Length: 269
Image 1 (tube, rainbow, N blue to C red):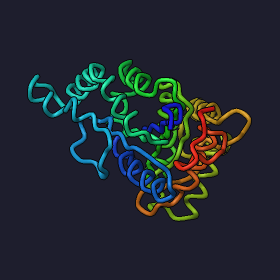
Image 2: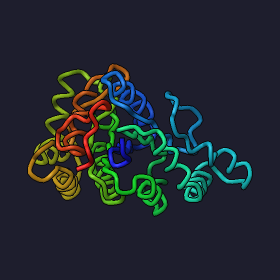
Image 3: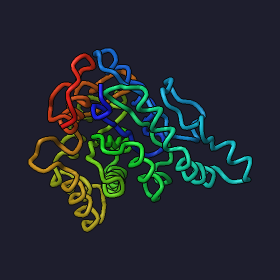
């Protein structure tokens, strides 16, 4: 299999949104369905992750060690750690390419704003991904999605991430197992209809100008041509709910809907 066959899936979201658990669950789902996948931990500050990464940046840079060595606070040490990763990108990329897998799941740092909103984070991703096809999965915590004002903040954050990383982006609600089916339907309607979002935000007491800005941001996140909604499905790393739909959305972005099985690798389009 050539290196052109590698597809990169970058999992991004606020701290506590369930990025690492989604990488774990999605990776297991892919392997169960006979797909080859490598999990990459790109968080040098991770104390524990629920999966065994094929590539782990902590082998090169460890935030706790940086914190102790340079007497930095947690955030300062994470910023320094991400900056230091730039010195090891060739080796990290070589490690990833050596896995010779079809899919590479990248688990990004917990404090996403320190990663996505500084120049170093997008640079690190560009250097790792190179010319391969890639897609970002931005996840919104189901608890946040249940509150209109928190949901508006999440939409602005998703839009900022799309602008900063410059990659195709799928937006999803994580921890779906925490929601009742009726509530899920209500949130789904709001997240897939800018007009419904605007009405919900105004009804919750949000300034109409901000509500309009959130609705416009949601509309901007929707792919051209209406091939997929802004939030494709709800997913749960605990129950596995929605992982098949998430995979289908990934395929639509990465391979035009064609299945990309390990046994029959397709050339990169």
